[in-house]
Image (tube, rainbow, N blue to C red; front, side):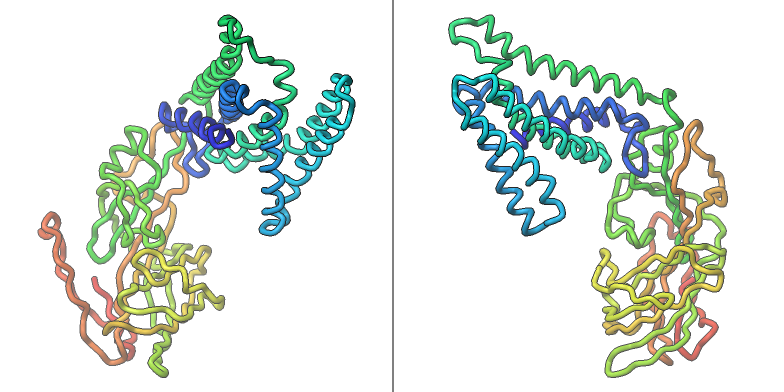
Length: 441
């Protein structure tokens, strides 16, 4: 029952998104007015429990289902006590209260039906006080996780089935009209769910709320002078569909921090932007381990800088960025190591790497990021909508050769579509030739 309740609740929000996907905000994936959807998701879970109860009540009985739910909660509380002690109280306390109320009710004389029901009702009331906040707070994680709240409500409803059976008695087999009344209860809840979902769509329609959100980012490859738009959100308007004309694929060179996540994208005009720069401060090899000290800076005063090391050229053993140790065991797609530094000073940040080199040179991808899309030629903001979290990213690839080596990296195969426009690869020595760093331009 709990699984079905969670699925039914989740289906409500997915259906609303299928009808109007643009109502969800870009950053948190929530509509501006989620209240009606929350209520609809809870009612969908309730309808699932009541429908299954109507089908199973003759075989298992209300008491049997409630006892089964109580056992499940008790076992879950014991498991959480060993694994997540801080969370176990949220399950153990309601379970203890319901179990105590059930035991007291069973010990009372059978002829005292009203008193027995009252004791169990009191236990359920205390349980509602304990579980109620958790049901509503669960939606703070987002409507996509709202099915957890529906599961908590389903747990409470299953515990209350003995009292629900008193108010909703089973019909006699020979009376078809009473059977229809039995089916009418879950059907009424389903109708309310549909009505609330429809009301949520109306309340969150375009023009009825604050301006809807759009999100695109821009990336320029300083080596190839090719640029593209990209977004992790599905294009839903004519504006972003005109920019994001290609299906979602990983763009690890354009956005190295995306860790292989598929992004919708499309071609963009190349802006005249300075690429980030790398200066070699020191380059020493000790016992087969190469130690590099670099300074990463932006030629356009970008406050966000990043560097990624190609896994095929080196394995990073340790890394320090701006004096702080950075984990090196979090591989990101094709990159053995990488980071983004936000709030970088104008002078840049110092990066120290200890690595095992696998090739003649260490290939690194560097990037800087700003937020003004107005620097892109021909860019126009979305009409009637607000653009959130925009980025202008400039990337380039550098090869850090061993001291004194002058061998350039092998040239990449030209793209037949852009070969006529692409400039030839020219190798030039960096400002500090003693360390053999070459920049491909």
